[in-house]
Length: 429
Image (tube, rainbow, N blue to C red):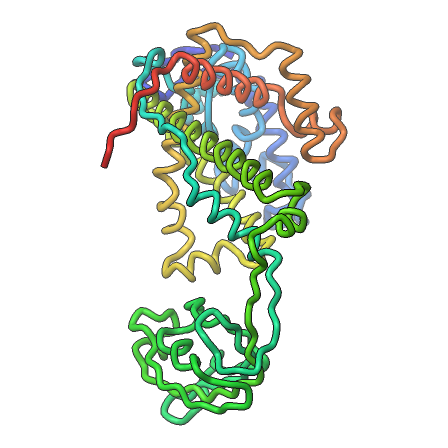
């Protein structure tokens, strides 16, 4: 095979090659043997017609396209892969020409990994929040702990804000029950705002055994169009009123919700937990701001194939999460009032941002000579194997070492940017 010309224009590689007639002929023979059983030739049983008869009947080019498919992997390897081009996405044949001497001329196009002109990535400034924990935050966390062990008991009195009522209800629109508007033995916490406006408020003061008619109006933007903005009546019967009894914040609570014996010890630990959480949040926000600046400072044109691959990966991950909850991507898209194509378009900007950052960080790793050593790779495989509950050797067959190397290099570049960064005080809003 002869590589006649190879040109790069931004992220697109175009290669013109000449394939020997013997190679092309071998491809035609394979294409004939694979396709003859589908071709009908008068006077012959299917699959038995000689190649020359088929070519005479349908034209000499009848097997050319399939022949190119047969030989293309080897041609592409020799013309592109073996030449060291770093490609992304799938290649395509944009032109083919069979010459009189039976040699084949092909034009192959494929997108290339982008070139990056780095901007500033050392000494980058970004705001980092100073972390402090107030007494009010500690008390709020303590309240949450107390509510976790609160008791819900039945009371013989009218319902108040914050109580839980056990009710049967039936919704009627113009005197006719509507779908999804009825339930029995439903527990509703008054003040939770889980029902449409006006419903819970009208149950304050109701006692066990009471029957009430509640007049309410569905919100104008309610998801069920036949109910949006409609006035309805709910027939409600109250079976039970329950009160939430929250324990006092004392040493006994500390013993119930933690390993500590005193309330002061518990508060000190809660303060430390809140501080750690806020430190982690501040670090993530600081790092995110740095990455955004570093990515924006670089000059790079992303190949469409890389962005589309990231979009597909995000869709697959989201689809997996949805299916674990009994929903599909199509159903989710319709619920949002669109289709799958529209949903893909909505996540494309985020995908492009992720790809850009990864490409820039990879370029920083190359510029700084950051490598993923064999020790690094083995440690990463071991960590992932433990995470997925798989054998390390089995995992190595599923995740190519090239992917591990890229991830490790990107991670090291990210750490370098953060280590070299300058934290500034956040701007007061």
